[in-house]
Figure 1 (tube, rainbow, N blue to C red):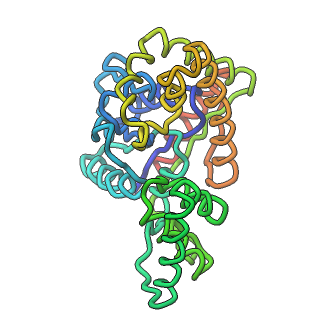
Figure 2 (cartoon, rainbow, N blue to C red):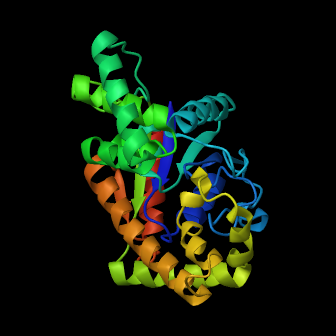
Length: 307
């Protein structure tokens, strides 16, 4: 089953390219973004507008209340179902997003979770970590997981004490991540993975401009939806978490804006590192400084589709 994937850092033009390729290759788009699943959070997540979508169907957008939890395992299950349904219609599934963990979990046979029963050893560890959490707090417990198993820590919210403890238990007793199988994961699809990039200075300027446009579009008002929900998963996203010191009267709105720009630039750097080091990229493309490269890209996709 063929799946086209468009990945890369924030602000690099994934949405525009996805719609262009969906139009050319009879595709439907599956969002691979961990925040676009939330209803009402539109500006900070840079959701595609109705006009931009140009009647191309988009999936896994606006499927959760912003107070809900949504995991890589949820995405993995739902996106695979969408890929099957789109393919069954004779159309091309196009997965678009910058959340590397989601895309990796989708394309490979990662088992997100673990079913091992470790008996008395496991029970002893659970009691140990429960006592630690009671004494030091949930954040401190999660930080232990972050040191031991950053892949699991990225997936599990610190408030989910039971899952954090389970991940620590699996890592301590098996030496492998709860998110990662012992065997080398295998690809599930015939995928063509496009990773978009550009010169760092250009990317950072685009990110800064994007944040300015978000504020002009009403991001500050949208963020107030989360003011009383600081502990929910959506509130941890870049573009929203930076507002909480402002809500508490600790910083100005201009300082919020600068914090979002900084966090977005840092995240873009981490995204590029993830796709370089953890993913099997078919082709890297810079369509910002080399827009003419799209013709060669389309030819490569056509050849792949005809294989």
